[in-house]
Image 1 (tube, each protein chain N blue to C red):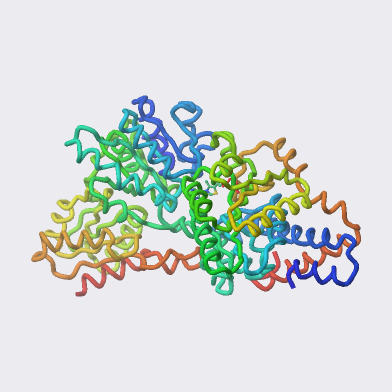
Image 2: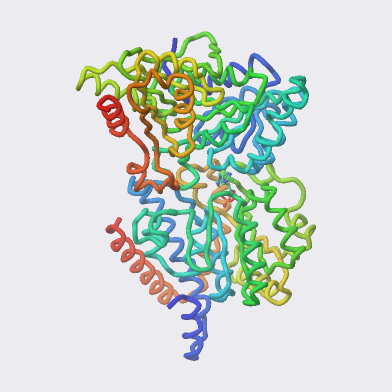
Length: 307
Length: 326
Ligand SMILES: Cc1ncc(C[n+]2csc(CCOP(=O)(O)OP(=O)(O)O)c2C)c(N)n1
């Protein structure tokens, strides 16, 4: 049962107090722990390839996924583990894939940033998959499926020209496409202001994509903004954008972080996870965490053995 | 003389050329403040400042297109693609502009720029981080494609590339970046682009290789010598385009046998071109079909299966044996 179903089930049992927050927390916490574990595995020399963790950005993935149906398509980038988990809950398939195992969700051929599952696609070529997302959205529209496509990009990826070709095509041909910009302020070692002229929001609006903005320190606020953006695309059948000011709390991939300890400290204060945790009943929170730890341990064992 | 690895040697060439000619500029993603993901551009930003060492947006097509314009207007850009796997986004400029200016202006205008890129496998990476696509670049008329195999030739050839009047794609075998050190002369060296090197003389078989495969070729040849007393002549191609046919033909005419070892997939790769040239000009000297070693014609696999995909010392040794025993 994925977490959307769980929310629905719990809700229907009548005890609605805090159930949504709990499930949201469960979603974020599991991603957080997976990402932390991956960095540990790398540090211990037990993983190769590379990995880009979404530490600090988990809520974006969970918030958007909540508003999507199974028919909707999610397209993501190098920082995709959270998007995948929030969408599918397939922890074991993901872990096996990152470890390059045959039983991974792409038979261990794609690895960390090249996931491919039903209605879920990612690619490590920055911006390269945005026109594909546009095409998918147009196809869904032509087939009359009612599905929408959500594509996640980083703010650094707004440097790629093909992103604007895609905005133009999406608006011109009315593609039901939601562009979610996870603006963490950095592209690898380059701070966004060093690489971006003008206004991020106006870039989308210039092509006629109405663009929401969310500060992103409060998980529920992200959730509401995501709901509005998804709803807009669904209702109008036209493209829209959502810029989430977010924070990457881990290294760009592993061990490569050019930011100062002070800056990282400031960013940690923006982390939505502890806020959400504080709003929960401590006992229920611990139960959720214990369950996530169990799942993670089981997935680790199933794909190789405990750390 | 100083002993250094390939990263340091390339870095040295960049320092020397930027000092020598103030028109030389370095540009790319994370090459400045961060000094490059492989630290190849270390120290440049501090020494030459942000006007000449430029951190670009994430925009490969924009980087190369801008570099073409700069080159046409008098600068000497050295643009970095963070990994060769991201370079395909700039192919339009390479194909559409770089060598065509010389052609359409009768040599009046050229595009003197260098595109540096780490390429190749063997570092347990993932998709887009392991390919050897030198054939793709070399297929474009007028584009020079240079591949060093060690620190000394990397420094000497990059220097030549920066001084060259035309566009040079400079492909750096990343598995060799820190794999070994070598004596690099104090004085700046310029090796001619398009000239191969005989790195070991021999009489029984010619072994042609380049990039990271060269070390494996040397090892396989040493092993074949120890095991069956065969004398192998080894040619380091160094430049895929232009290709030094003469050095290869001279050697093959002498030995009568040839093996080519490349890391790239075999189909339509540089080895195929070398064989065609041997067939054209030295067919009757051959005592056996020319042997070829390369990787498979499939997408480079994720790290777990990398060993099974890339050719190694064993595959070169087998090809030597087969060619000798024909
Ligand atoms: C075409 C391309 N060029 C370069 C890279 C190397 N690279 C990987 S992630 C990254 C930065 C991406 O920044 P952003 O879009 O802001 O996403 P973030 O990493 O901050 O989540 C770069 C330059 C790449 N993957 N693809």
